Length: 118
Image (tube, rainbow, N blue to C red; front, side, top):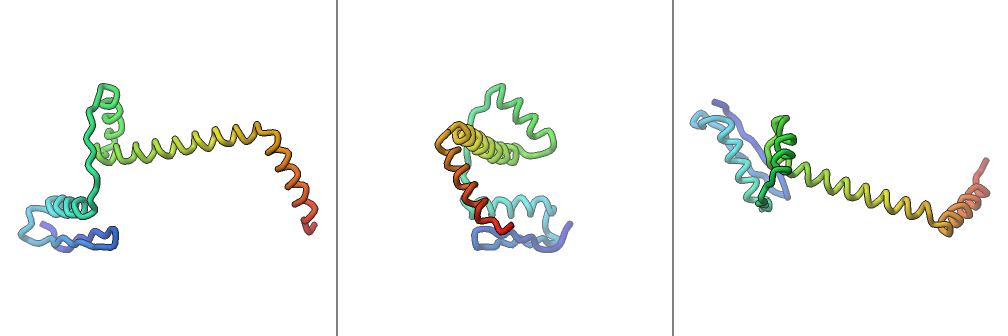
């Protein structure tokens, strides 16, 4: 048995779960507190149907002990990051091929070079 208090803070509120001798275990209190945090944060629950490919991906992503929810949350964040990087890459390639933009950049660089103190 564990004694003490666990505090969860988020979105301007704090919830505390008291661990006492009557607790079944610290894990049970953490699960209860986690439920309270999820409920009060109003986290969106998403259901989806897996296929063979996504099952294999989930198995790989959870092989390190991560939960399915943790793996999916991280995969979503990684997917957005990758999408943004690909967008920036496309835009930079487009800018690199724009002759008018390159000429303007060179002109500004020359003007800035004249303003240099040394």
